[in-house]
Length: 197
Image (tube, rainbow, N blue to C red):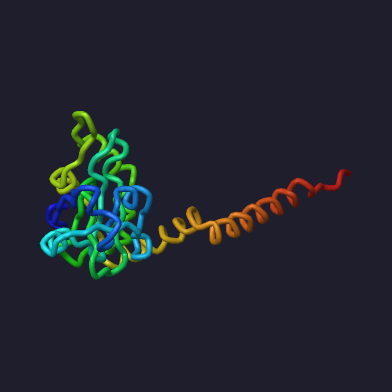
């Protein structure tokens, strides 16, 4: 991944700087979401123009949780899907900014949630008083990069499953329809009798 991304740690400031200013991506925003959109970012922070320039979050950036109490909680990722004029990210995260146009943001999001990537992270993170992950560790991970067309195909399929699993309005009706069909199938099978001679 070192050939595909530049890595940077986030903003660390005192509590007096929070609550006003520009949008700020929190650790929990990254930990709890696979995708980030402008409307998801509700925290605010005051920062200097230099901090904004260095720590700006842009469309396509992948954010990873950098530190936590356990190894299982580091390395979770979220991908920014929207263009934001001004937005920075917190010091408990790592930002991976794409260096090429070879990767779709949605494809990246799914790649970094696989069992293989999770195992890599948990086996390579450092642990002293807290578990921590470095940009260098992520940079050493070998990421498969199929063609853009194949990435789109994969992302489209996984987006449908993701929506079914996370969106009650989409998922629940689809699940009810599937269970209704299953019920009707087994009902008809169980109540179909052959005539006895």
